[in-house]
Image 1 (cartoon, one colour):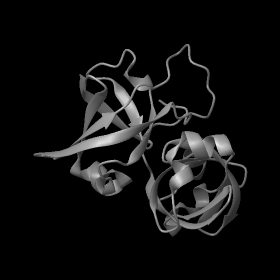
Image 2: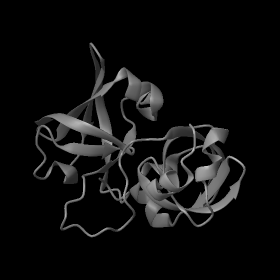
Image 3: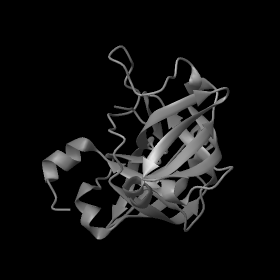
Image 4: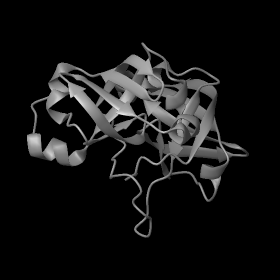
Length: 190
């Protein structure tokens, strides 16, 4: 489980194929503390297993299903990726509980200073609630407004600087995870 409070921005250093998908090598500093093979890590909101830790980077493997269902299939060397280690029972819960299981990929439809407007497939509309929680690229955010299958979030300058959302442009794709309580309460047929 994660909280959606990004710990650092990693840099994608390498992509190499393996029979079931791709291995991503990511440069980092903070999340490397005590990181070992077999640990879980949220990368742009996608929970993956660390397969190697070497020097100032670590590697994870993503299978084809994950690459197709998330933005990880579109990443390029040099991309900045939001990184978060899982919470422990002693952790503060600064955001809300995230599973790291991306529900869908959304598209940025508008950007105005501190407001991003995104669109998700219409079948996810029941999960969008004003002042509800949503995670975009693994960042815990509050939904500011909803119009059909479009929603807006506003974020403070710190979040723009500390996550890769600050550099996202209109037309780019993002990973979206909806509030687990909304999923249980609405039980949509998706």
